[in-house]
Image (tube, rainbow, N blue to C red; front, side):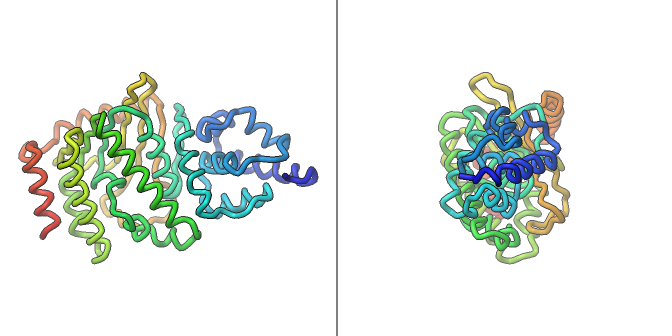
Length: 311
């Protein structure tokens, strides 16, 4: 429990974090799964004993990196993050709510966690990407690609790999009931497999594509289309079966993107903003017109992918 004399400093720290996020309190509440009243009480120092799980929910909503989350925990007289906290991150992802605000996703773990929260919603999904969905990466691939960030915090590696495993599990569960349609630019895919610039990364990427082939063979509800055009902006649209609002995750990635080499940590955005969603629905309609018919047959596509990674 925080001593009364420290309540003022913890309240000031919370106010500072919310102000720096540039998000209204109600949006922070939605992103965290906490109530607007609870966050206001944190800002006013009205809560003497804040649960560790709520602090992590709050931190995830604010897109804090792991070092900043440690700082938040210390302000509330809690120990630094450990691997025991990883289930709390997954829980925070599930509790996260999407609003019409456009939420930035900083750091790769934050992006993966937001996509995980989307994938936990029962319903069909459409993905437009320059490579197979990240959740089909082989264990170890994430931490190799993001090795610079892995070195920055003791739990980063385990956190990334755990979220990845949960996303893979969720994808397979969804494919038992729902349709998942995946559009991939052929040129981008070939560049991804053949031009990584790193021999070990290249091996990881080939295993990534191999996992896509295996998934296609195992799950009829996974439909993969190769396109003759690069979408530039990558996105995923989730269509919930319960009638709730469709949501979209999106990010921009230049053609010369090199894994692990980026100036900042901005990984993408997510929202249910109807105008943004309409824009991506229109983009999707255009992309469908660029589907390559020579790979329309599932077996022909799988054969192409197999040759691509065998060369």
